[in-house]
Length: 447
Image (cartoon, rainbow, N blue to C red; front, side, top):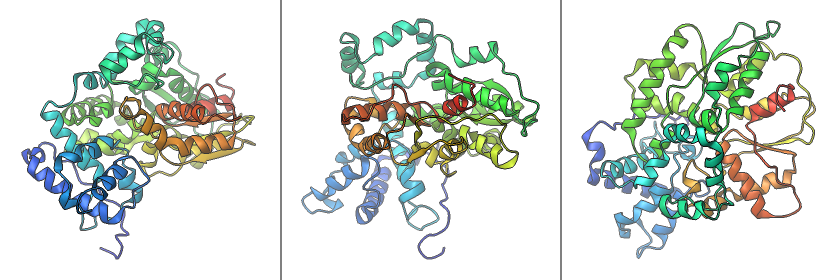
């Protein structure tokens, strides 16, 4: 190993099927080993709230060292981890191949997996992770569901807060009665035969969020790809499992991985690329699934074939060139680079994509929004999440762009709430679109 651990990070498979993985004494020993290293380093102090909680816990102990901290007090540290992977990918100098072999997010995942195995994940929290089921139930009554989940509803939101722990002030995603998979069957865009990239083929993995909560992301992506000569199909076997991963249900995630990989295999065999429409799902397909089911060859092939949405369009721009027709977006764009996009180690692809729009000012914000999947909407975390994301909201407000965009739809909503809390004279946009929606608008393919 070279001095300073300059090699690229190497991530080891998660041994979740090994009985020792669930041994509480061995977990505690590993937590103490890793926490002691983190305490001596403190390079991650400004990422998620896990590290401030850990450092305060140690600093406030009787000895000021880890030896006087009770193991029972480790839980808030683990609970604050959003599994964004940024400490592993961008900050920690001790990740493998360094001899310290430190993987903080997967250690927190192990802590949650043990809690899940012991039945300590609350019933309501488990129900919130059932995104497919919830979407199927809500779509036929989308109007009623959106009324019930609106922050202005003084009847249902306090009840949700009490029973499910969802903060009444947190904006929640809306549901659509017409899912993306249904729209895709009814409206097939015409592929542009004159586009430089004509001949490419891609299958869009719809994701639960795009399918049930924001079909416009999928419609925009498909329209832009068709205009650029790409033949597309839409497939959505089931959720990627990120919501279950957040609560340590690794077996469920592995089951979903094998199912989705099996259904996408025929498309990969026919030469189709795979595009995951939001970065959390792209991260799962590319990186997390192969670490959970390393023996599954279909998952390995899917990982190699998967692109993030912006990544794929930038690849076209570099290799074949984009189709003509892009027009400026008046007022400029502030684009937030989502943590799960950063963890894919592919660069600022959303910013690269938007810079392809002519004569349009692009401002970039690259730090955590504070939302962290479902973490930031919970009552115990919402105010902390806004505090973590305050620098992002402040940068977005200072930029004063007409559009505020984020690759992560939940992060986008959270940023707008943060901007509203700041006050001031900067108008807060009504929505925070995905960059592909703005790209479609620049092409005149969306309103």
